[in-house]
Image (cartoon, rainbow, N blue to C red; front, side):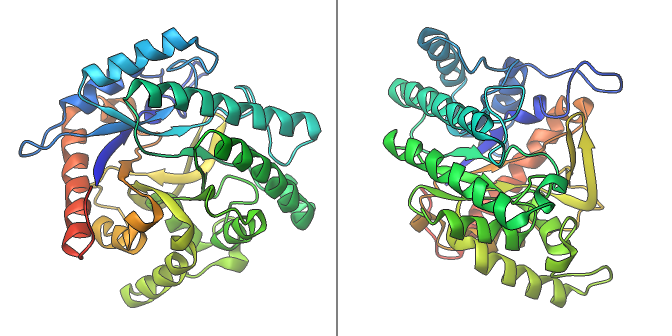
Length: 343
């Protein structure tokens, strides 16, 4: 199983507004990733954010091939891609009006085009295309949950057809900030409504799914409450992962301290923490085992670290990446020792 690092922590929550830190360039993120090493092991690749300033979604074929060359020259592969579905990029809300939903589908087409170029280049041989509802917050969704989930499902169905035509699969990211995907139960209902498991599945992130347990944006679906015991935690964790694991086709290793965090437009989401954060709520290796059971049967060939919205000083510290890489190795080795097969 290959070990990847995400590029979007250099962008998400960064910007030029007052109080925001500046973005970190793609080149810098690639260099930090390529430099990490633990006992001779390095990151095998990256998962890639198809957003400016890292990437122009409308870049020419030649420009994209140059990016692929730059990644490959560092000894890295490309795995999963994040489609530019958010308002203000190419896309718009999957539960919006007809025009907004067409923009969402246009963004999926853009991601499939770029995936095809990377595949043809040879830098990409596995991974999925990640999507979400592109509807920040749940207030609008709550005005008519059934109708709005039906809209999202209809948009996702069309997106999945586009992906299938390009030989790609879509993974819907489970995160409390995305309308209709903001709890484990709502996420499961959406996946069932789409009902295209060969083409559209779930992307599990350890940090975000921890807040699924706590029911942060959906108290009615909470599986845990403050003051829980270790036994209560793992019983609840098994309940959640048993429901969502069959849908899981992409997996993010991460840590969470139980807090909700946000920056810029990306607000009220699970707080990603350093792998060795003393306030971390998760035994990363043990929790990963729940998601990775029989991972290969679901087409998972790599796992990715997500340090979304880390401070720049943390991201630019080489020790950060060596610690993360060691954690990723531990997750992979535990997966192998459990009788699974590495690729």
